[in-house]
Length: 354
Image 1: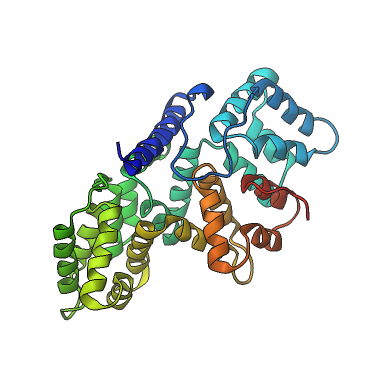
Image 2: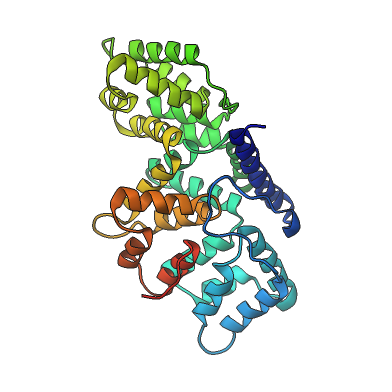
């Protein structure tokens, strides 16, 4: 098996583990699979859920709360281990761990801890649901998830969405979005992308030519051609198509997309394009966006840290510093405070000093 094929298989196994845990609420730490990428959080060695449950109970029992004690357990265990701790906590003390956390903490610190204690598949589903609930839609969340996920991830999320909310994710996307952006999301939601990793130079030349004809060489834009190529071709093939397009036109496909599209459909296509070249940089830009300017989008910051810390957050940290000249830790230090900041430090693999 090729190196890329092995890493893709390894990553799929990681998601299969999460899906199994989500459905059965069971786990076997000795059979843990690891995702493709360099995570900042890995399963704790010599894991003892009874000891951890007792430590959490001690941290929240009586007068005052030992927040550092909570961080040392919840922020230093994998999501699978945290689910085992929750069951052990309830078995030993007859109390719900999330309810106790909610009663003992507050604000963004509470939100982060609850996110960490939520089964990761359920957390993804909740974020998608919240993005479409109420008045308005948070298109950034839909792009961040659906434009970057593998077929297996998408099918896992779709199954869980219907189980939790009793509704089809595809139907929800269709009712909450419109136009070309809706068609892009529905295509992605089908989870039918070629994931072979095989590249074909002749096919890439044909696709690059068709994209040129569908965009820059005509009045108006044939959006369906872009939709087909970006939702069907594997990421390695899209990268090759970009190279062919550059050779034909003297400029990148991203520039063409910006000239031919606008709004959410443009953002979605560019997100797919960026994931073919450097996914770590894509997520680094999202983290930067969550903290740039006045105020911090803590919901986005929490979601990105929680969902990437067990996958590739070390890669994202490197990309972040390369792109923005300062470490992710320094940005978190400037935009957060207190126990919330220290919990984030733990998740990104940094100590809390200074």
